[in-house]
Image (cartoon, rainbow, N blue to C red; front, side, top):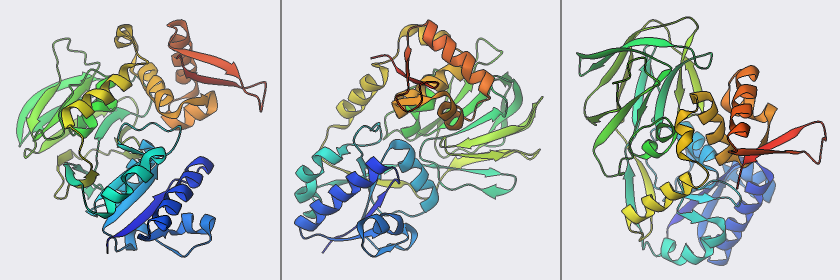
Length: 348
């Protein structure tokens, strides 16, 4: 019999939705096990996701929690079933908590396919990162600060540039942060990676598409402040004077894929991503685009929460919010919990 592992984010709504998933599994007489933190909430025995011996790992939560969990699992290649919690963004999800019961029979009867999502690994300061599903971004620690670097492809010099940053993305990551800074949309099956300079000082510099089997090297990195690598938007690592090397990971992430036409599904998600944006967002600085993207994902946040999510300086966040408000892209309302605090959300 197929055994299913269940992992959940720790927010109250996610835990409640995970409880619903577990109830559906119980009612279907499925063999399942839950992670330790979820087990405490449900009064069950649990086990660390790293130690789970399961055929499918169901991850209940948000895009952010999914990416964080995959980073923690490292090279694990168990098929993943992302289940989007209610009210959470579902750009990486086909199944929602509200429709999980309708696919449980297909799941248990193995009426689904394996979808392979290529990943990247990076060598930073001589140490290899966990596999990255979306991207690696290289930025100065202080927002909108210029970095200079040399780009090498398979050991050959390709260009030397100055920009606000650089993103190397997988096809999956092409519809994440890469898209908001002018990167191309790439179908998941394409055997390529993309390199996107962010606000290059060279107006002719354009995103670069490379075969996935080539190694990318970024060296001669300099800036007036410290430079960091941002892994899948979740982890920040300081970069020293050693080159950063990026290549395809040996193991792809395997996702459970039900019978949905791929191109149509991708188009639907892209339309969803652009519902709350407008052509003039291209003129916004990267910090404002990042704040807008975080609000699209997180629905509603205070200024303090935006600072925590983006890791931008408070002054930069205040400026970004004022720009987004003036462009009519976001709205602000008073918090019912604290009338001194404003809550920001994307204008609907």
